[in-house]
Image 1: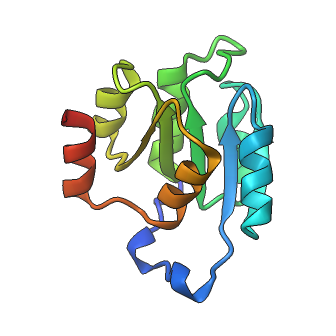
Image 2 (image 1 turned 90 degrees about the vertical axis):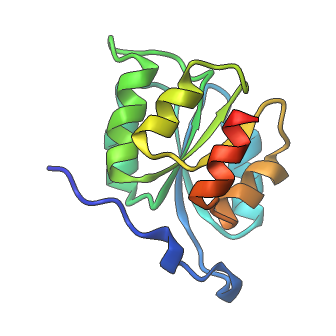
Length: 141
């Protein structure tokens, strides 16, 4: 059952809100560590076939989707990204030239972090959601 995507403009991170985050990555440890140090509740997922179920079970408000995640169970990255973006705020961690960038933008993803990137850069984007204008400027230029 699809649930509507939350309006993250209403999240007041200055209050120190703790976010529930799913990290979809082949190497989630650096991000999990940074998220834990910042006080967020994070869960990892190592493959595309289970990513939507893991994020849903965890009650994730946001998903950090790394383009390097393994395609598992016959589920392509694009398909997993589409399902996740329909239900969660997605932060795409990818190369600027990745085919996933314009695809994610077309799905309504606004938060992009281009590799190479530090966990601190990803944490900043998580805690500071991009506006539509920022997103367009980021992935276009």
